[in-house]
Structures are given as structure tokens and as C-alpha cells.
Image (cartoon, rainbow, N blue to C red; front, side, top):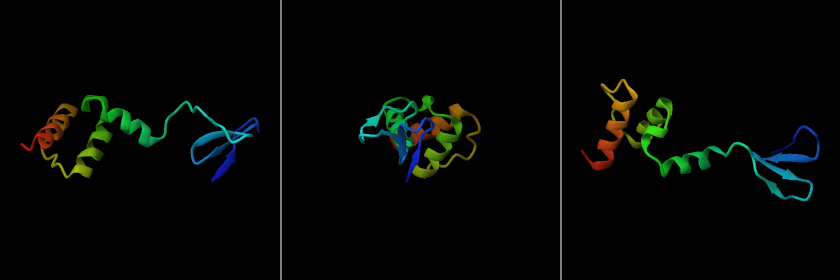
Length: 83
């Protein structure tokens, strides 16, 4: 889906800004997939609590009793190690 970016010289196509010649421009905010890929190279502490809960759900990690961010991180790390 393409929409015109304010100013009219650029278009937004599937979240990417494109100029009149079809050149892709850098966007100030990366797509969700790129942000998640960048986080994959960092420790779990870089995630928000909401993101950690989503990650736990996707990985099938039980968060019963994990009410704080540190508890959630510990549960995810234990699951990665197979504990």
C-alpha cells in the first residue's frame, strides 16, 4: 500500500519511504522485524516487560510466579538453557 508522505515528494510503501525515482530512503524508525533482530544480538534486559511476555508466550515459557522483569528474564534464560 502506497501513501503520500507530507510534502508530496516521497511515498510510503509498506512502511518504507520511497522518492520519485523509486530510491529507498532511511526511515527514522526501523520496522518491527529489524528492531527485533537487533535485540536478538543483545541481552534480554533490553526488552520491555511487554516484549518479554510476548517472547515467553511465543517460546512456550511458563511465567507463573514471575511478576517482575528480572523474574521474566530469569525464566526465559532458564528455558534457553533447558532448565
